[in-house]
Image 1 (cartoon, rainbow, N blue to C red):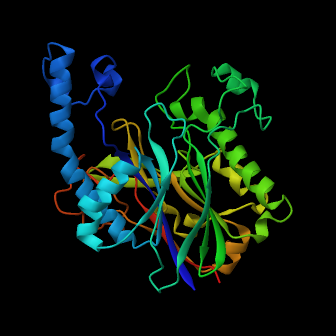
Image 2: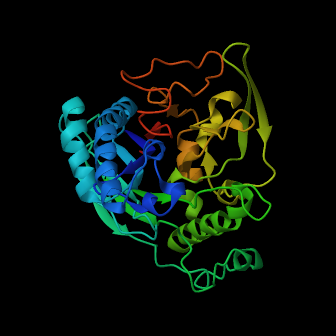
Length: 370
């Protein structure tokens, strides 16, 4: 009995306009920065026009990437609300795949922009086994003090012990698939952001992601028992905004690119893998072929890395020892350099930088959960 599950950061699937760029240039789209805008009222009109003009191509590409993943269950990140998700499915996904993800679940998390995690389900697997929702539990309310996770490093970042750990949520979804229980933990950890305090963005924000990872592990161990969690069927899916390794990119299109793998000494992902707690099955792919995002701040800072994860419990990992996940890259923009042999056909109308399906790639895997 097989089930196909996927994770995808859909990049700002929103049904409202964000006008914060009028006062905060860091949030102002580069298109509007080209023009002289006299007042906020004019800015709002132009931002509406810009957003609408870009949205249709973007969401067609997002839908193509989701359709290509062929998953029965999708864990999504950066979803505004159920209304936005329903509108996207009806207007875009339905035209490609027909009746699809009729069950959708999300809660309001802690993100200041209102982007949340969500899970959408088919009524049954591709082989006809019913997928039934049992319950949903939000953990957005948990504080550092609740789990005794407050540290001096967090204090230095201005994080008080009474504040909430998760920047969005750890959304716990209990399902049965043909009567077999499965628990999904849908997450989206703290973003790296820009350099600050003499550190790069990843290093500066690492203490928050470390706490988030420790909290996810604690939630699972409290639920199933520390000595028995490995025997249960559960999966952690989402954008962890961190990597254990990356592929450094150098060179250019004229002289050719070079791709050099590099290991990281520290990562919040290690918290969830330590002691065999879970397995990152994307690491079953070749070293240069594990990336789900291309990061660049210019020619001197470019790398490919894995930010999107499907972490299996030991029981599921053993049961699926030969399962290798797929990474859907057809929605990547043309600026993304692909290591030799990995090139794919981009979807129609994909741009140099945008439109694109997302800055992330969907990750999908077929699991035997019998």
